[in-house]
Image (cartoon, rainbow, N blue to C red; front, side):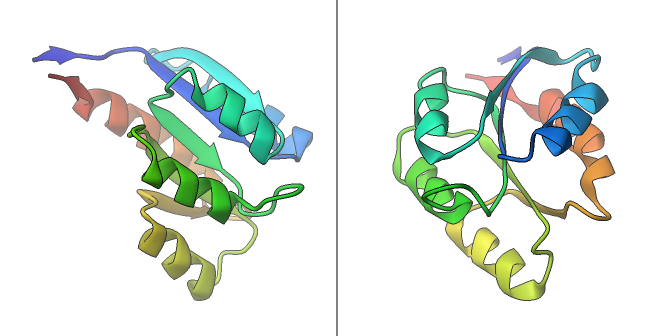
Length: 129
């Protein structure tokens, strides 16, 4: 087994200010290969062709929702870790995301700082067989 030490990350969110906050927070982590950004479902589908290791996914997107994209990813042959990150932090959305296969769920307003620690953890435990 070989440890993968550089992650390909896809951020799917239409709020550019939030995307910039996340990118600024994680871009200097040692384990980041590169970060791709998509603002909607269709753009995300194109970016998923690069087979990211991690997807940070908002629920509210223009057109189809992040839940639709989560469902699509889990039905595909891709296997990224998925962090749902949303302003909808209530239990209904949390449960819906976990039921669809999300690995993590973070409330944008008070939990997004956990992203760096989650990425470090994923990088330390992501092995290629």
